[in-house]
Length: 138
Image 1 (cartoon, one colour):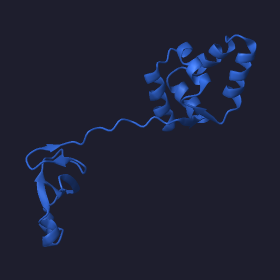
Image 2: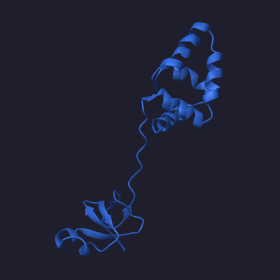
Image 3: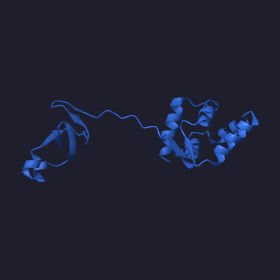
Image 4: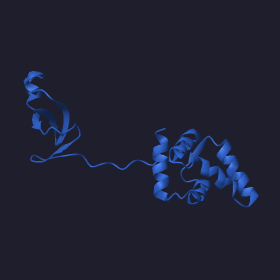
C-alpha cells in the first residue's frame, strides 16, 4: 500500500509504509491511502486522484553557441547551416550572418538571423521553439 500526506488536495510525502509506523500520530493522521501510480504533486478532490496538468516547456530566449551547435548536430542540421549561410546573397548579408555564426557567444531566439535561417533549414516556429528547449538542456 502507498500513502501520501493530503495537503489541501495536493499529495505530499508519498510513502510505501503505513505512516503510523514512521510518523507521530498527529502527522500520520493527515495521510491517506493512494493508488500505486500516485506521486507527490498529484491532486485529490476527495474522490479522485489525478496527475497534475503538464506545464508547457518554457522557451529559452537565448542559448550559448555551444548549446545551439550541439542541438543542431543532434537534429542533423549542423552541416546544412554552413551550406545555407554560404548561399546567402547579397555578400554583405552573408558576411554579417557568418560573423554572427562564428563569433557570437549566444544565439537569441528572436534574432533576425535565426528567423532568416529557419526556413532554409526547414524549421517551423514550433521546430525552433523545440530546438531552443532542447539546446538549453545541452
